[in-house]
Length: 206
Image (cartoon, rainbow, N blue to C red):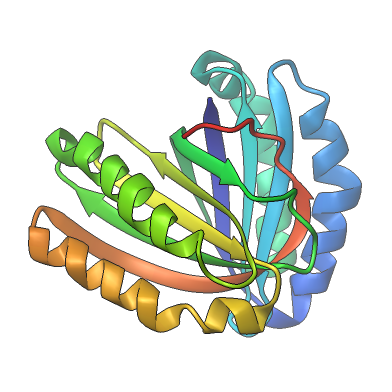
């Protein structure tokens, strides 16, 4: 399973307009493409960051849509008055306690490791991060996506409410510290976002 994420940091006053554009124009177009399983959109209304992620049956199906998706991405960038960053991933872990609900909250963590450390980093997310988060109030799901060539990774944990997410900040920080002490990993960024569109449709991968 593969995914493409497009992140735009732009005008926070345009976040609702971006959500409408993705729901009304982007999602029907992209999900009709061969091999596309679905789409999700995360939004931080305070910073103006929006992250759209599409899921695909194969890397070939995903890459075959580049030319069609580019104009949609350019329109979103114009709408948000921000530059788009695009990443392509392999979905290494996907676990849901229950289906995604719009209005739930996600913590997204970006990190980088040596490509040779990808498997151990996946194992840490599955065996430590997911195992610890599963026992917290309001936990909904967790995913971990990787680029095996560059060593870049993106982990997401989702909770029923913003309060549930905030209650796990200390635990999440401790897990990042634990992984940092093991060496070989650089944490790049962490963000907390609302799940504005929930239609990713990735099967269980643990």
